[in-house]
Length: 276
Image 1 (cartoon, rainbow, N blue to C red):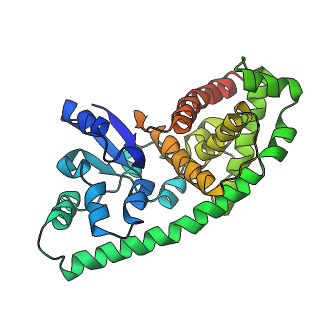
Image 2 (image 1 turned 90 degrees about the vertical axis):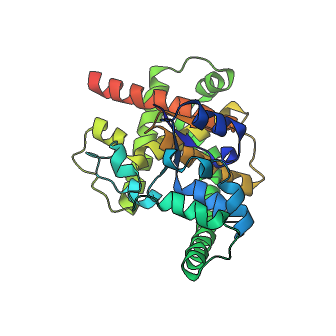
Image 3 (image 1 turned 180 degrees about the vertical axis):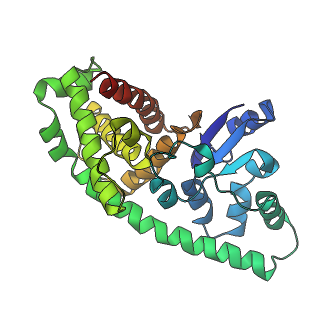
């Protein structure tokens, strides 16, 4: 059995269909941002199209709980998949798919549910753009603070990171985690590095550093299209969610790179502080 997080760019893909058909116990894990991409169109036809593949395999589809809930999980249970999954009444996915695929007009309850989801999708977008702008605009300052000229050359040429660079990356991720944990009013004192590494907010902070490294690798070019940066923000969330499961199905090279390096960095982070 495999449980892969599905990026929204793969929801209607042949790759996803083949993945679900290849084994009856393969699972498609859909985070809240996957649903955001479906519902932001505010179109019944858009919902039908978005569910065109997973709607054929409702028993193999897993819905994750909202990101705010996952971010607030206690470190002791943050890696427990059962705590990440939305545990609604059995048959909800199958029932909803049958409603939107039906030729009959939606009843009042189904329409109210769709209207609520469309409102929810509208409320997410501005926050994503605002967060992307703040973070992307800090890239030059972060590069100057974290890495010297020789280290930047190593990043850009794909060289082996020094121990100093690795420690710098880990410390920067912890600092971001502390800021995010404070905003979420989470316990920050007395946690071991291993406990910190379980949390979504730490992994998201580490993912932000991965995006900084990707930007440096590409030559530290000025980001002109902020709307693309907001999409990168969404893609990063898929990469972070996938660290709790078996893989990430996406066509986005940056998200794949971030996920691969996130998994390796989390292992390295735990090993480093265990040895220390």
